[in-house]
Length: 261
Image 1 (tube, helix red, strand yellow):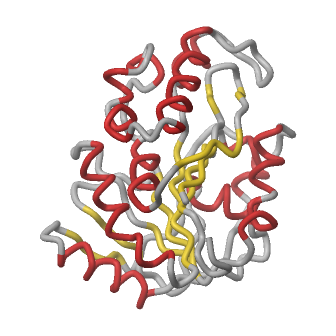
Image 2 (cartoon, rainbow, N blue to C red):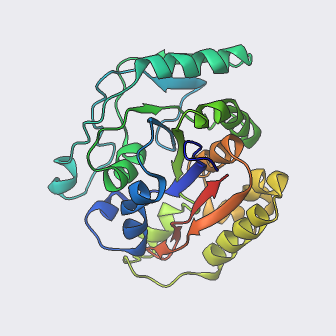
């Protein structure tokens, strides 16, 4: 990897409480800036920006969206005033449209917590331009992989492509079972995380793209697909993958992160 060539990265952003609760995952996210330096821009594919077709955010000054409820006021007081990059958003839209995929730009949408939580921890100065590119839970994993592939050339210009979701994401298992932050990890969550790591290490892209169907307890770990779809975009934007973080919060949220070189 050259000095300018960044990998594409997938991170698990977890609960918004990661901003307030110490954890290995929080420490990892806080080290993103030290690990990857200061990119020219960051393109975030967030699980919380789910649209019918691809949408790139083009606000020059994106607002901080607090897209959650029932949490401490301290979280709602947080702001991440990073600049946007309308020109980059339009370039991304042109690239996606050039591949024959419907796409639009949104000049009003801000940054959801799938974006600002890891960015606030990793680049707290908020001085790197940020563009979000949506997922679409109506589309297959292969669609997201292709979206990522189209973003590959941006990496050559020092742009970080960052998928932000969760390697496992069964919230009902947290609330219904009353799991606390340091709850034990059930076998069904551990087995899925281990399987994904093994398949990524083996370069088995097809298996990973079908992880919810083929992986152990896939549907239990992902009752809805939104939080694993950013992984596929990060995979498409990069090459060979390696796990760069592994931990759990609340027992059932795998906070794994991957870099694709």
